[in-house]
Image (cartoon, rainbow, N blue to C red):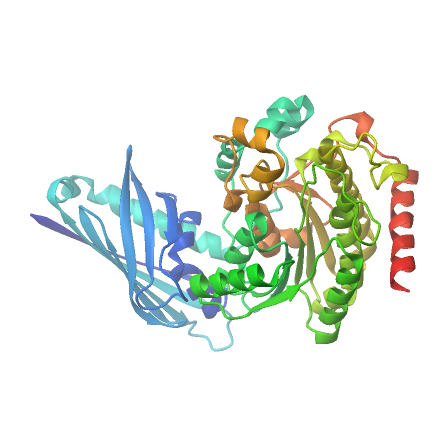
Length: 475
C-alpha cells in the first residue's frame, strides 16, 4: 500500500539567484530553516552536484527518522532535484529559481515542488494527517523565505545569561557541549554568501582551525591556510579540496612563534596584494614547560600575543583594501582567571605555570581586540574576540590530559567549538558589531571578577609595549 502527496510553494526574495541556489541545495544546512530536521551533513566528497549525498535526520513525533538525499539533477542557479529515501517514504524535491518578471527588479522567485510517496504504516496514517503535513510543509518554506531575507538583529545576552556569568559556575557550564546545544536552539540561519571571499586561517591543520577551514571552504571561500609543518599543511589542503571540491585553497608555511617567520609571512601576503576579507588568528598552544624561542622570547607570549599582534598590524592595509573586513581572534575562557601584568608579559621561569601564561596572553589579545576595534572602525574593519568553550581538540588532549580525562563526556567537538568563528566570518548581523567577546554567537562579559579588571593606564601600557616590540623587530 502507498499514498502520494504533492505540495508546491512559491516565494520571492531580494537575494541573488546564485546565492539562493547555493544555500538551498546545500542540504547539510537544511536544519537552519527546516525545524523538523535535527541533524544534516554532506557525506560525499567534492562540489555539490549530481550524485552528492546528504544524510538527514528527521524528527517525527518522538521518533528520529534517517533520510538519505541524493542530488539527481543539477542546473547551476536555476534548478535542482533531490531524492530522499527513508524506510517509509520517498521524497522528490524539485527547486526552481527564476529571475523576477521585472527585469529592473533585484532578486528571484523560488518554486519548491515536493512529491512524497509513503509506504507501509505511514501510508495508512497519512490520509488522517494530510492537513497537518501540508501545513508543516508550508511553514517550512515560509521559514526558508524568512532565512533568505537575512534581516536578523545582533544577538544580545539575556538576563539569565548575565546572571550565569556573574555566578561563574553556571556560566562555565555553558562552556560544555550541553551549553552549546542549549545555545543552538536560539540561533538564526546564516545565509550570507562568502563565496570568493579571501579568508586567512592560522593554525589550520587540526582542531578548531581545521574545522573552521573545512566549513568556510564548503561555503566557497578562498582560503589561505597558515601552517608550521609543510607536509602536514599540504595534507590538510588536499583533504579540504577533496572533501569540499573547493580548489581555491592556498598554503603558507610559517612558525608563528618566531617573529622572523611572522614578518616574512606578512611580507609575502602584502606582495601578493590580495585583499583580506577575514583574518582568523587561531594558531596557539599551551606549553606546560617553560620554553624560550630561538629569538629569546618566552614561547607563550611569542605565539599567543606578540605574533597575532604583529601579523594583524602588518596586514592592516590588505584588510582596508577589502572594504568591509573582519578580524577574528580566538581567545579562551581561561583568560577570565587572569589580569594583565605588563611587567610579566613574558612569564618568568620561576613559578611558571603553563595555564597561567596562556591565560595572561589570551587576556592581552582580548584587550588588543578592543583597541583595534576602536582604532579601525573608520577603516570599515570590525574586530572580534571569541572563545570556543571546552572543546576536545588535539591541543587540549596533549596539554591538559587530566582535564581532558575528567571532562571527556562534556567536551564539545572541534566543529562545535569552531562554530562561532565561522559565524563571525559569515553572518550578516555581525556588520553591526565590533570589539565584543563572543561565545556561542552571543556577546559575553570580558571580566568575571574585579580582581582581573585592568585600568586604562594598563591597557595603554600593553599597547605601547607591543608597539615597541614591533618597532624594534621590524625596523
